[in-house]
Length: 443
Image (cartoon, rainbow, N blue to C red):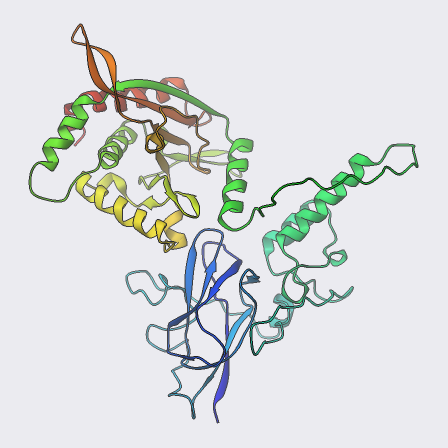
């Protein structure tokens, strides 16, 4: 007799608690192999393919494309064993398999992740009941929440948001599977309560006529866009940022790059040269490679430079991170920038590729603009912006000449340093751009 096994949405790591189904890669009745991707999901940080740890016949799918599921919710059921194909070893002991994402456990280049085990008797209280399986694509109908018993919410962030604002979760009807309460439900309830308080006159009982809903296209702030919006808003709320800028003559830097690329070997990008200059500048001004720990009321200076860089993709702006950039050569930086950019545009970055940055390099010159005052990538303390490099009139050696000029801007957290440090950092970067030989003293 075949054994029917249930595969649940695995722990996505990086604190992620839910994901949206983007595209099913299998249908009911399909035969799948061990570790074959069965669904493509979008988390708040990346789009990933989820492989199934079982081999057999798909007997049911849970949720339609566009449905948001919490970690631990059923994805599919698979009939394995006699009558289908040899049953795989259990996920806990099989080699290279288990409830993992592409780019995590089955990739032996990444460290193995420990599985979290719930104490016996707590599974029902810790997660909502599984939604009914569908034998063919069909909409998932949420069940009405009960007034007693466990609250239908799995995310600790959702519970904290409700607790901090004095909201009773038992009064809400969740929009997720089986009535699961999502963050959007809590935010909508808080917004509704705030509107009601603001609109109610102090001593007037006359009801106002309802206002018509705003017209126009509505785009949900969820997934990557939602995370970006929240992160930028938090940055503006918490960080007292300031910006300084300077124009620099990049003619010599461009000539040095042309000379490097004239010899045999991999080509070196302008971004890689600027990154190498940044790591040298951060070695001189380590205040800018830091973060602020509000809980401890301390500035934490970080030992390594994990350099984020802005990459425009079909899903929006992403900031992949180059680890230990201070130890890389321009050639190595060029290769890593190219690799991460390709993964970003293909939607195949792992969440770990988008987190942990300590300083960001933002080349907005690719958009044809000269300057910008960007928002710091929280919880970092600074960002260097680079405008387009274009011919401009410039006084060179006492005479007016046409030179390749670039505008450099530094946005920094005024809590970690004052203007003297920020100006010193930016001036050093500009000096290296104008005369790359200055960088040799730091190598």
